[in-house]
Length: 276
Length: 294
Image (cartoon, rainbow over all chains, first blue to last red; front, top):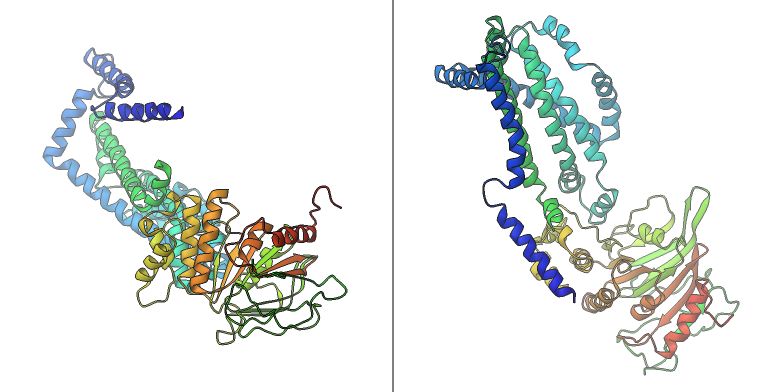
């Protein structure tokens, strides 16, 4: 008796997946409607003169400005400078964060040496350190990169450390029974086991990295997206400010998508389980 | 059937040992190799060792806090011998297995694993199949079986082992996609591919459904007959112990309180009169009183 019911279920699912093939489903259109309305209202308000351009430029104006900035080469150059800061800061912070997590996670001595100072530093407000950083590093690239690196370090450290410590003790026993060496155990059991949590840390730290970059670029920048925005403020160019903000947002979304792609690849053993 | 005395019951609790002769009856039913009979044992007397035991435990004691779980356990497992260890939950049977597996450094006593020719001390050639299969979830089935394998060609050996347990087609599968029975087969393959002298089975069938369990029982017997490891099977299932093992031990009060040797040929049937008699003895030993009697 249950066979026909099962058949119907499968057919239903098949139909549903087929209906996803058109570009956007009904739900997607519905969800797209309200943002579109907002943009239209915004444009109408600007054109009617209700919204002054020195407060907020119109969507159309923002689009043409963006195109102009790209053509002049201002925007690509600003993006390049900012990306470079983010990349250097992120790399330094990630290497330090993961490295310290390995030291703390893989040995008690390491934990006792590394964890207390990091927990103390973690309690300090990241952006409260800016004055000190300026005193130490001046106003060049170094304080900006350092701020990003420090912001990246903590989420990665905390997540990787807890990932390592969270590896199933039963699997550690398997490693002992299979007589794996310490190196083999770390390579085959501990690090892969900690990977999921590390990737969570990676996403968090990328969020912090962009935030730290935006704040750092507000201070005394002479190039980059932050400089472009600050400069535009002086001339009441709200269109340029908005373009800069959108670029920041897009960069954040792109890196997040990159990590999610990485997650899908690295955790495919779990993906299979979920989609079963 | 094989003999009138296929089942030899001995018990340390009885005042007088029930069998004292050291020679088996002439008609040894199922196995060809000469077997020194494990005699009725008062536990203080050291038993004559089988030719080359793969595990020898003397005076093993383990305390958890103030609770003494194992209290001077003596145990010997011969080469190729299939021993089942029964016990109520909390009787320390899993603790004993963990000691033999080298997973419990807190125990005191003499433990030798791996046989005379093998490595002295814990860890000789021991393999373990746990209650949950404990496959490493981020390694495909083949990599799980080959993990830590010191062989010229680990992958080929692992593939052969998977073939043997009937999982040849699933070597590329992720462990989380396997059924309970398949995962337990993979776990058995991972243990057996190491050609262990001693195979420790920690209730590996208890989480399986009844049908799968029957199949896996057959598989284990089959593999045992082909590879002849000494086996210690920890279980709470009396029937399982009787159907599979050469010798059934009951762990109670921290020591081996009872020992039965079963010489029926395999496959055995649970309705065999000797097993019916043995079942009630074992259940009694485990503190389960059959209804109607007592």
